[in-house]
Length: 196
Image (cartoon, rainbow, N blue to C red; front, side):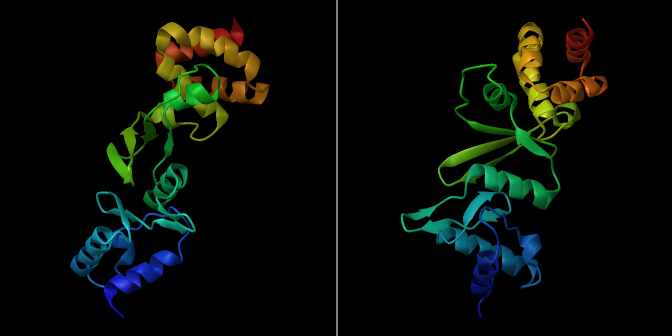
């Protein structure tokens, strides 16, 4: 069995959107051969080159082939690389109803390096973010932190008062508990909303 066939066989057993890298395939052959086989599979359209050294298997359905969903690919990348990857502040603000603007580009914040991931025609931007924006990760309080950071010091205070009415008390308490990790301007606003 040729190496490219072994790689395809390996990817068939993986859940949709799971990224594959040369390092995860070293049990099939040496690094140079695996790199070359991955490159050839991408040229033939049997794998999608999502980024430097990261490949995805396209999803095949009765309607043809497509890229895996952005959320699945990002979640799988996060677990494979051991990174924290969360939605951007703009997306969080939209989800929480703090803005009606819908982000046009797919931007995620990551604990890893800044880079781009290509999923077919869609480009997903992964931006390195400070630890405080990733502190509460995929929890509703973390979404609130990212949304407030995106809104900035001028708009955050009014938005936080709206969130205090909208969020469950436990989520708001979680946000207040995280205040020491936040930048001074945001910690002050959170403290004022909690105690003032």
